[in-house]
Length: 199
Length: 199
Image (spheres, each protein chain N blue to C red):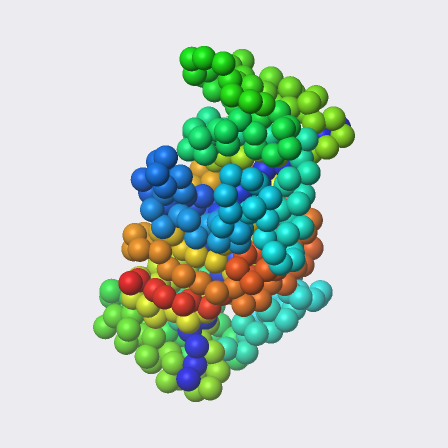
Protein backbone atom coordinates (compact mmCIF):
# COMPACT_ATOMS: atom_id res chain seq x y z
CA UNK A 1 0.00 0.00 0.00
CA UNK A 2 1.17 3.51 -0.71
CA UNK A 3 3.10 5.16 2.12
CA UNK A 4 2.32 8.74 3.06
CA UNK A 5 5.71 10.50 3.08
CA UNK A 6 6.24 14.05 4.25
CA UNK A 7 8.80 15.97 2.17
CA UNK A 8 9.90 19.27 3.69
CA UNK A 9 12.97 21.49 3.77
CA UNK A 10 13.56 22.72 7.30
CA UNK A 11 16.17 24.97 8.90
CA UNK A 12 18.16 23.53 11.80
CA UNK A 13 15.99 25.62 14.11
CA UNK A 14 12.84 24.06 12.72
CA UNK A 15 11.42 26.62 10.32
CA UNK A 16 9.98 25.83 6.88
CA UNK A 17 9.60 29.47 5.95
CA UNK A 18 10.71 32.83 7.21
CA UNK A 19 8.22 35.46 8.33
CA UNK A 20 5.89 37.32 5.95
CA UNK A 21 5.43 34.47 3.50
CA UNK A 22 3.14 35.51 0.66
CA UNK A 23 2.72 35.10 -3.06
CA UNK A 24 5.72 37.29 -3.79
CA UNK A 25 8.01 35.36 -1.42
CA UNK A 26 6.41 31.96 -0.80
CA UNK A 27 9.20 30.93 1.59
CA UNK A 28 9.04 34.19 3.53
CA UNK A 29 11.78 36.64 4.29
CA UNK A 30 15.17 34.97 4.02
CA UNK A 31 13.45 31.61 3.49
CA UNK A 32 14.65 31.05 -0.07
CA UNK A 33 17.85 29.55 1.35
CA UNK A 34 15.77 26.55 2.42
CA UNK A 35 15.60 25.60 -1.25
CA UNK A 36 19.25 26.20 -2.10
CA UNK A 37 19.72 22.43 -2.30
CA UNK A 38 17.45 22.53 -5.36
CA UNK A 39 18.38 23.98 -8.72
CA UNK A 40 16.90 27.41 -9.37
CA UNK A 41 14.56 26.33 -12.11
CA UNK A 42 11.43 27.42 -13.91
CA UNK A 43 7.94 25.98 -14.25
CA UNK A 44 9.01 22.48 -15.26
CA UNK A 45 9.70 20.49 -12.06
CA UNK A 46 12.71 18.78 -13.68
CA UNK A 47 14.37 22.18 -14.00
CA UNK A 48 14.78 22.15 -10.20
CA UNK A 49 16.56 18.78 -10.13
CA UNK A 50 19.86 19.09 -8.20
CA UNK A 51 22.86 18.24 -10.35
CA UNK A 52 24.76 16.40 -7.61
CA UNK A 53 24.16 13.29 -5.56
CA UNK A 54 22.72 12.53 -3.08
CA UNK A 55 20.28 15.41 -3.49
CA UNK A 56 19.38 14.24 -7.01
CA UNK A 57 18.31 10.86 -5.62
CA UNK A 58 16.04 12.42 -3.02
CA UNK A 59 14.55 14.70 -5.67
CA UNK A 60 13.93 11.75 -7.97
CA UNK A 61 12.19 9.83 -5.20
CA UNK A 62 9.95 12.81 -4.56
CA UNK A 63 9.10 13.06 -8.24
CA UNK A 64 8.37 9.32 -8.41
CA UNK A 65 5.43 9.63 -6.00
CA UNK A 66 2.04 8.71 -7.42
CA UNK A 67 -0.03 11.38 -5.70
CA UNK A 68 0.45 14.59 -3.75
CA UNK A 69 -1.28 15.88 -0.64
CA UNK A 70 -0.62 19.59 -0.36
CA UNK A 71 -1.81 21.83 2.43
CA UNK A 72 -4.05 24.66 1.34
CA UNK A 73 -1.58 27.35 2.33
CA UNK A 74 1.28 25.63 0.52
CA UNK A 75 -0.93 25.13 -2.49
CA UNK A 76 -2.00 28.77 -2.59
CA UNK A 77 1.53 30.12 -2.10
CA UNK A 78 2.77 27.89 -4.92
CA UNK A 79 -0.09 29.14 -7.11
CA UNK A 80 -1.25 25.56 -7.34
CA UNK A 81 1.74 24.57 -9.50
CA UNK A 82 -0.49 25.57 -12.40
CA UNK A 83 -2.52 22.44 -11.72
CA UNK A 84 0.31 19.94 -12.16
CA UNK A 85 2.83 19.25 -9.41
CA UNK A 86 4.65 16.60 -11.43
CA UNK A 87 3.79 14.15 -14.18
CA UNK A 88 0.08 14.80 -13.93
CA UNK A 89 -0.35 12.85 -10.70
CA UNK A 90 -3.42 13.85 -8.69
CA UNK A 91 -2.91 16.66 -6.19
CA UNK A 92 -5.21 16.44 -3.18
CA UNK A 93 -5.73 19.64 -1.22
CA UNK A 94 -7.49 19.29 2.15
CA UNK A 95 -9.41 22.46 2.85
CA UNK A 96 -12.42 23.69 4.77
CA UNK A 97 -13.91 25.28 1.69
CA UNK A 98 -12.94 24.75 -1.92
CA UNK A 99 -12.40 27.93 -3.91
CA UNK A 100 -15.03 28.94 -6.44
CA UNK A 101 -14.78 27.53 -9.91
CA UNK A 102 -13.34 24.35 -11.32
CA UNK A 103 -10.22 22.92 -9.70
CA UNK A 104 -7.24 23.50 -11.99
CA UNK A 105 -5.61 20.62 -13.82
CA UNK A 106 -5.02 17.57 -11.67
CA UNK A 107 -6.06 19.24 -8.42
CA UNK A 108 -8.84 17.89 -6.22
CA UNK A 109 -10.03 19.85 -3.21
CA UNK A 110 -11.07 17.58 -0.34
CA UNK A 111 -13.48 19.10 2.17
CA UNK A 112 -14.43 16.06 4.27
CA UNK A 113 -11.30 15.79 6.37
CA UNK A 114 -7.70 14.67 6.32
CA UNK A 115 -8.54 10.97 6.76
CA UNK A 116 -10.63 11.01 3.61
CA UNK A 117 -7.94 13.01 1.81
CA UNK A 118 -5.29 10.49 2.83
CA UNK A 119 -7.43 7.53 1.77
CA UNK A 120 -8.12 9.07 -1.64
CA UNK A 121 -4.46 9.86 -2.19
CA UNK A 122 -3.41 6.34 -1.21
CA UNK A 123 -5.90 4.83 -3.61
CA UNK A 124 -4.78 7.11 -6.41
CA UNK A 125 -1.08 6.40 -5.87
CA UNK A 126 -1.46 2.65 -6.24
CA UNK A 127 1.83 1.02 -5.41
CA UNK A 128 3.73 4.31 -5.42
CA UNK A 129 4.22 6.60 -2.42
CA UNK A 130 2.20 9.70 -1.66
CA UNK A 131 4.12 12.93 -1.22
CA UNK A 132 2.74 15.13 1.54
CA UNK A 133 3.75 18.78 1.68
CA UNK A 134 2.88 21.63 4.03
CA UNK A 135 3.43 22.24 7.76
CA UNK A 136 -0.17 22.49 8.93
CA UNK A 137 -1.20 19.38 7.03
CA UNK A 138 1.87 17.54 8.33
CA UNK A 139 0.95 18.48 11.89
CA UNK A 140 -2.63 17.36 11.47
CA UNK A 141 -1.45 14.09 9.92
CA UNK A 142 0.97 13.48 12.80
CA UNK A 143 -1.71 14.19 15.39
CA UNK A 144 -3.99 11.64 13.73
CA UNK A 145 -1.34 9.00 13.05
CA UNK A 146 -1.64 9.26 9.27
CA UNK A 147 2.00 9.78 8.37
CA UNK A 148 4.22 6.79 7.53
CA UNK A 149 7.56 8.41 6.81
CA UNK A 150 9.27 11.79 6.69
CA UNK A 151 12.05 12.91 4.38
CA UNK A 152 13.48 16.06 5.92
CA UNK A 153 15.95 18.21 4.07
CA UNK A 154 17.70 19.75 7.06
CA UNK A 155 19.24 23.00 5.86
CA UNK A 156 22.31 24.42 7.63
CA UNK A 157 20.87 27.74 8.64
CA UNK A 158 19.17 29.24 11.66
CA UNK A 159 16.30 31.39 10.44
CA UNK A 160 15.43 32.64 13.92
CA UNK A 161 11.74 33.11 13.11
CA UNK A 162 9.04 32.06 10.72
CA UNK A 163 6.74 29.08 10.43
CA UNK A 164 7.71 25.92 12.30
CA UNK A 165 7.31 22.47 10.81
CA UNK A 166 6.75 20.68 14.11
CA UNK A 167 4.32 22.71 16.14
CA UNK A 168 0.92 22.18 17.75
CA UNK A 169 1.57 18.47 18.17
CA UNK A 170 0.04 16.44 20.96
CA UNK A 171 1.96 16.58 24.24
CA UNK A 172 2.70 12.85 24.02
CA UNK A 173 5.97 12.14 22.27
CA UNK A 174 6.08 10.52 18.84
CA UNK A 175 8.76 7.87 18.37
CA UNK A 176 10.62 7.84 15.06
CA UNK A 177 13.13 5.49 13.50
CA UNK A 178 16.02 7.05 11.61
CA UNK A 179 16.20 4.96 8.45
CA UNK A 180 18.52 6.94 6.16
CA UNK A 181 21.01 9.77 6.38
CA UNK A 182 22.55 11.32 3.27
CA UNK A 183 25.01 14.20 3.43
CA UNK A 184 25.17 16.78 0.66
CA UNK A 185 27.36 19.89 0.86
CA UNK A 186 24.44 22.16 1.64
CA UNK A 187 21.87 19.89 3.26
CA UNK A 188 21.44 16.72 5.33
CA UNK A 189 18.75 14.41 3.98
CA UNK A 190 17.16 12.60 6.92
CA UNK A 191 14.55 9.90 6.47
CA UNK A 192 12.40 8.76 9.36
CA UNK A 193 9.72 6.13 9.85
CA UNK A 194 6.94 7.22 12.18
CA UNK A 195 6.69 4.46 14.79
CA UNK A 196 3.93 5.84 16.94
CA UNK A 197 1.86 8.88 16.39
CA UNK A 198 -0.55 10.86 18.43
CA UNK A 199 -0.96 8.34 21.20
CA UNK B 1 43.10 28.80 19.38
CA UNK B 2 40.47 26.72 21.15
CA UNK B 3 37.14 26.49 19.35
CA UNK B 4 33.93 26.93 21.31
CA UNK B 5 31.81 23.91 20.38
CA UNK B 6 28.21 23.44 21.44
CA UNK B 7 27.33 19.83 22.29
CA UNK B 8 23.61 19.16 22.67
CA UNK B 9 21.16 16.31 22.14
CA UNK B 10 18.02 17.63 20.45
CA UNK B 11 14.78 16.04 19.31
CA UNK B 12 13.83 16.43 15.66
CA UNK B 13 11.31 19.05 16.76
CA UNK B 14 14.01 21.05 18.46
CA UNK B 15 13.67 20.29 22.17
CA UNK B 16 16.57 19.61 24.54
CA UNK B 17 14.29 18.62 27.38
CA UNK B 18 10.67 17.79 27.97
CA UNK B 19 8.47 19.86 30.26
CA UNK B 20 8.86 19.96 34.04
CA UNK B 21 12.62 19.49 34.10
CA UNK B 22 13.89 19.47 37.64
CA UNK B 23 16.47 17.75 39.84
CA UNK B 24 14.50 14.50 39.79
CA UNK B 25 14.18 14.43 36.00
CA UNK B 26 16.87 16.76 34.59
CA UNK B 27 15.72 16.13 31.01
CA UNK B 28 12.07 16.70 31.84
CA UNK B 29 9.10 14.49 31.23
CA UNK B 30 9.85 11.98 28.49
CA UNK B 31 13.18 13.71 27.85
CA UNK B 32 15.41 10.83 28.93
CA UNK B 33 15.11 9.42 25.40
CA UNK B 34 17.33 12.30 24.25
CA UNK B 35 20.22 10.50 25.93
CA UNK B 36 19.45 6.99 24.67
CA UNK B 37 22.45 7.28 22.36
CA UNK B 38 24.61 7.30 25.51
CA UNK B 39 25.16 4.32 27.76
CA UNK B 40 23.14 4.44 30.97
CA UNK B 41 26.06 4.90 33.31
CA UNK B 42 26.90 6.14 36.74
CA UNK B 43 28.96 9.00 38.12
CA UNK B 44 32.09 8.29 36.09
CA UNK B 45 31.70 10.01 32.67
CA UNK B 46 33.33 7.04 30.92
CA UNK B 47 30.48 4.83 32.12
CA UNK B 48 28.25 6.70 29.64
CA UNK B 49 30.49 6.02 26.63
CA UNK B 50 28.44 4.46 23.80
CA UNK B 51 29.72 1.03 22.85
CA UNK B 52 29.20 1.47 19.10
CA UNK B 53 30.61 3.78 16.45
CA UNK B 54 30.10 6.49 15.39
CA UNK B 55 28.57 7.59 18.69
CA UNK B 56 31.70 6.51 20.59
CA UNK B 57 33.81 8.85 18.44
CA UNK B 58 31.58 11.82 19.13
CA UNK B 59 31.60 11.01 22.84
CA UNK B 60 35.39 10.78 22.82
CA UNK B 61 35.68 14.15 21.09
CA UNK B 62 33.43 15.68 23.72
CA UNK B 63 35.53 14.18 26.51
CA UNK B 64 38.74 15.43 24.87
CA UNK B 65 37.75 19.06 25.32
CA UNK B 66 40.01 21.12 27.55
CA UNK B 67 37.36 23.20 29.30
CA UNK B 68 33.60 23.30 29.73
CA UNK B 69 31.17 26.20 29.64
CA UNK B 70 27.92 25.09 31.24
CA UNK B 71 24.79 27.18 31.57
CA UNK B 72 23.66 27.76 35.12
CA UNK B 73 20.42 25.83 34.68
CA UNK B 74 22.23 22.86 33.13
CA UNK B 75 24.82 23.00 35.86
CA UNK B 76 22.20 23.05 38.62
CA UNK B 77 20.11 20.25 37.09
CA UNK B 78 23.22 18.10 36.74
CA UNK B 79 24.10 18.85 40.38
CA UNK B 80 27.32 20.36 39.11
CA UNK B 81 28.69 16.97 38.10
CA UNK B 82 30.04 16.86 41.63
CA UNK B 83 32.58 19.48 40.62
CA UNK B 84 34.19 17.50 37.80
CA UNK B 85 32.61 17.22 34.36
CA UNK B 86 35.48 15.17 32.96
CA UNK B 87 39.18 14.75 33.64
CA UNK B 88 39.31 17.69 35.99
CA UNK B 89 39.13 20.30 33.23
CA UNK B 90 37.83 23.68 34.40
CA UNK B 91 34.06 24.14 34.24
CA UNK B 92 33.01 27.76 33.69
CA UNK B 93 29.46 28.64 34.68
CA UNK B 94 28.20 32.06 33.52
CA UNK B 95 25.69 33.33 36.04
CA UNK B 96 24.23 36.56 37.34
CA UNK B 97 25.07 35.66 40.91
CA UNK B 98 27.36 32.92 42.15
CA UNK B 99 25.85 30.71 44.83
CA UNK B 100 27.03 31.14 48.39
CA UNK B 101 30.07 29.21 49.46
CA UNK B 102 33.11 27.93 47.65
CA UNK B 103 32.67 26.67 44.08
CA UNK B 104 32.88 22.87 44.05
CA UNK B 105 35.88 21.10 42.53
CA UNK B 106 36.92 22.49 39.19
CA UNK B 107 33.95 24.85 38.85
CA UNK B 108 34.36 28.58 38.36
CA UNK B 109 31.36 30.87 38.43
CA UNK B 110 31.72 33.80 36.04
CA UNK B 111 29.61 36.84 36.82
CA UNK B 112 31.01 39.41 34.40
CA UNK B 113 29.37 38.19 31.23
CA UNK B 114 29.50 35.54 28.55
CA UNK B 115 32.35 37.22 26.66
CA UNK B 116 34.57 37.04 29.72
CA UNK B 117 33.46 33.48 30.37
CA UNK B 118 34.30 32.47 26.80
CA UNK B 119 37.70 34.15 26.94
CA UNK B 120 38.58 32.44 30.22
CA UNK B 121 37.48 29.05 28.90
CA UNK B 122 39.48 29.50 25.69
CA UNK B 123 42.59 30.41 27.64
CA UNK B 124 42.16 27.43 29.95
CA UNK B 125 41.61 24.96 27.11
CA UNK B 126 44.87 25.82 25.38
CA UNK B 127 44.99 24.02 22.05
CA UNK B 128 41.99 21.84 22.88
CA UNK B 129 38.35 22.71 22.18
CA UNK B 130 35.91 24.12 24.68
CA UNK B 131 32.68 22.21 25.19
CA UNK B 132 29.64 24.44 25.64
CA UNK B 133 26.46 22.97 27.07
CA UNK B 134 23.04 24.44 27.83
CA UNK B 135 20.31 26.02 25.71
CA UNK B 136 20.21 29.50 27.22
CA UNK B 137 23.97 29.85 27.13
CA UNK B 138 24.03 28.55 23.55
CA UNK B 139 21.44 31.14 22.54
CA UNK B 140 23.35 33.96 24.19
CA UNK B 141 26.56 32.78 22.53
CA UNK B 142 24.87 32.64 19.13
CA UNK B 143 23.42 36.12 19.56
CA UNK B 144 26.86 37.47 20.37
CA UNK B 145 28.76 35.52 17.74
CA UNK B 146 30.81 33.55 20.25
CA UNK B 147 30.12 30.03 18.98
CA UNK B 148 32.52 28.41 16.50
CA UNK B 149 30.93 25.01 15.93
CA UNK B 150 27.95 22.91 16.97
CA UNK B 151 27.80 19.14 17.36
CA UNK B 152 24.13 18.26 17.47
CA UNK B 153 22.95 14.79 18.36
CA UNK B 154 19.64 14.83 16.51
CA UNK B 155 17.42 12.26 18.19
CA UNK B 156 14.62 10.56 16.23
CA UNK B 157 11.72 11.61 18.37
CA UNK B 158 9.16 14.39 18.45
CA UNK B 159 8.77 15.53 22.04
CA UNK B 160 5.97 17.96 21.24
CA UNK B 161 6.85 20.31 24.07
CA UNK B 162 9.64 21.28 26.41
CA UNK B 163 12.66 23.55 26.19
CA UNK B 164 13.88 24.50 22.72
CA UNK B 165 17.55 24.66 21.83
CA UNK B 166 17.19 27.37 19.18
CA UNK B 167 14.94 30.05 20.55
CA UNK B 168 15.16 33.76 21.27
CA UNK B 169 17.72 34.26 18.51
CA UNK B 170 18.04 37.48 16.59
CA UNK B 171 15.65 37.82 13.66
CA UNK B 172 18.57 37.87 11.22
CA UNK B 173 19.46 34.42 9.96
CA UNK B 174 22.68 32.70 10.97
CA UNK B 175 24.47 30.84 8.19
CA UNK B 176 25.99 27.47 9.03
CA UNK B 177 28.21 25.06 7.16
CA UNK B 178 27.44 21.37 7.51
CA UNK B 179 30.85 19.83 8.05
CA UNK B 180 30.13 16.27 9.18
CA UNK B 181 27.21 13.84 9.27
CA UNK B 182 27.46 10.52 11.09
CA UNK B 183 24.56 8.08 11.25
CA UNK B 184 24.06 5.83 14.26
CA UNK B 185 21.02 3.59 14.68
CA UNK B 186 19.40 5.88 17.20
CA UNK B 187 20.81 9.31 16.43
CA UNK B 188 22.23 11.48 13.64
CA UNK B 189 25.41 13.31 14.63
CA UNK B 190 25.50 16.64 12.79
CA UNK B 191 28.45 18.99 12.98
CA UNK B 192 28.16 22.60 11.87
CA UNK B 193 30.53 25.53 11.61
CA UNK B 194 28.92 28.85 12.46
CA UNK B 195 29.66 31.12 9.49
CA UNK B 196 27.92 34.27 10.56
CA UNK B 197 26.26 34.99 13.83
CA UNK B 198 24.06 37.69 15.13
CA UNK B 199 24.61 40.07 12.27
